[in-house]
Figure 1 (cartoon, one colour):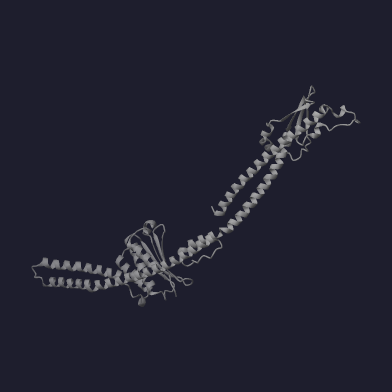
Figure 2 (tube, rainbow, N blue to C red):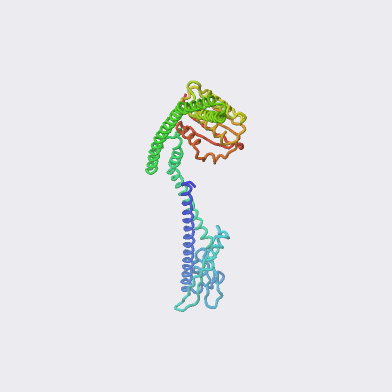
Amino acid sequence: MSLPAHLGLRLLAVAMLCLAGAVAWTAWEAHASLRWEAATSGDRIAAQLARQPGLGSAGPAAMPATAPQAAPAILTLLPGICADIHLGAELPRRFCGDWDGLDAAPAWFRRGLAWEASAEPTLRAVVYRGRTIGSVTAWPDPLAAAARVWRRVRLAGGLALGLAAATGLLTWLAVTRLVAPAGRIVQGLENLDMAGIRSPLPRFAAAEFDRIALACNALADRLARTEAERADLMQRLVTVQEEERQALARDLHDAFGQCLAAAGARAAAIDLAAPPEREDLREDARGIETIIATMRESLRGALARLELPDLAEAGLEAALRGLVADWRGQLRSGPVLHLDVEGDLTGIPANVSASLYRIAQELLTNALRHGRPSRVFLRLDRTATGARTVTLMLDDDGGGDVPRTASHAGRGLVGIRARLAALGGSLSLTGTGSGIRACASVPTIG
């Protein structure tokens, strides 16, 4: 949940509490007002009857039309107040103050005011010349009281709800604008590992967000420097590794190859010089020659893996075709190998060509030695427009588990990732159902 929504819900909860408090206070205040009006009406009627006790039983027909009349008791009742008047032996009389009956409260609201009907009425004694001659009982009319409370609650609730809605809306708009920089900051943090689209965060008006933005920009600068140093270090590591391979290939060819040639010559000489009766000696010499031939083939394969073709002279495409041809010669009746080359490969830097050749060499080795494919497709493609990315893809049907292969700690994938990291490239492994597709992408210039 976003921060504006979180704050909005909190403000809504506070507004609902304030609304409930305002309604409760309004209802209580209306109830107290009605109780006071009932008590006031009772006091007025009792005081009037104490001065003119006959008014309690006098009706319009009991008095002559021409006789002066005092105000009847009903006129002293406040609107919505009812009263019972008891005078001596007369029958009790009930009067209610005028109430227009409009804007009546809903039934559910009247049921909620059941406490009003159960409230104890106001009782006042009528004292005439020091003697109690009756009593007056006054109470709010339930319908009129409910209407009174309904009007006040509706007014107070409407005002409180309107103020709460306006406050919540204005607060939400203010908070949304205030926390808007948080989205920019999060986007900047997410783009820290994307050097191509990374851009510094702007300055913000809020001091807290501005400090965060400055810290993020400083972190991005340190990360960029670290990545540049790491790429340079990886490039130097790859260069040193290639130099060590070339040096090792020369040493093996010059020293170990000469030793094998000398041992083979000695074995041949022994075979020729052995006397006729020493057939066992000639058999041993021929066995040594066979072992030396096997070692020579192993040395030739090792030198082929260690030595780098002359890419500047032959080109990357010819080197890859030679690599595939060597594998075909070794496998003979093994899986079918296909090589497709698309795009213009001229202008590719030497270090990129060397790394792509080594990556193809490693991918073919992994596919043919660690799986059982019936076909292997190797494709090299360079886009003609845009960033001129070179993509090397190997697709085989030899099975395999992508998560297990991706997490394998062998030197093959580690070396491929190191070469690609030095060139700013990437490696992806995906399952095809029948095998694994490895795709290495390297950006080039030119």
